[in-house]
Image (cartoon, rainbow, N blue to C red; front, side, top):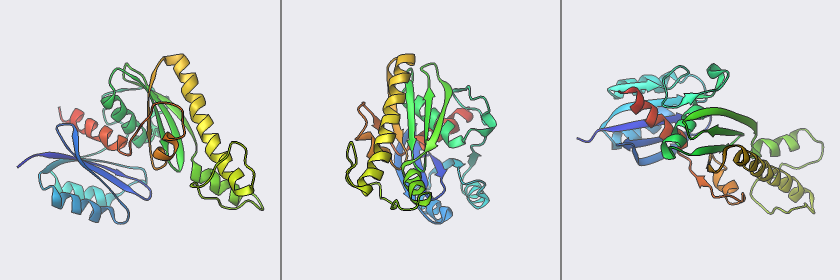
Length: 245
């Protein structure tokens, strides 16, 4: 029977996973609801999974950890302090989100020898840099598109709650378009500004967009961009293999 790795990323609302063989993703999955049921379906389809790694951005999930320990021969939870195959230069490593570090590992695994800019575009936007030498420099965090749209509605008296999808303009000519255009264009200019400044400092960058809004903004930013939902699970698989030797 073939042997596989399973990498699992438990988010606040969505769980993502991938089955790997020889460093390559065989199949990727995402699901909402009960993560144990989600994983049980995957392991039912891939009984050859003998090693698994998990990261959770929603805090401790003992039911998932206990389930995976009972189903695979080798299990690892990615927490602060677990060795990784890149150098972490973050000033407070214990406060760094493990999903951000896993994404940095995944980016370096995909593009070794490149300076990399990672934009994770979701509820929050995290912008991280990994150097060609395999050093995680750190990054910045700002509100994501949905958070900005919600804040404009919640903290003003008359602005509507505007959906992200819809018409945008350079200069909005009606309230809904003004809100959407301000948020969308603001994020686009933010991303393009970072990319331009970082390229002056580091030279050419590999640019990776990930997260739920990655495709939306990849079409709007004037750079060559690799968009993937699966950067964290690629990094987790690399960390699992790194700690197996």
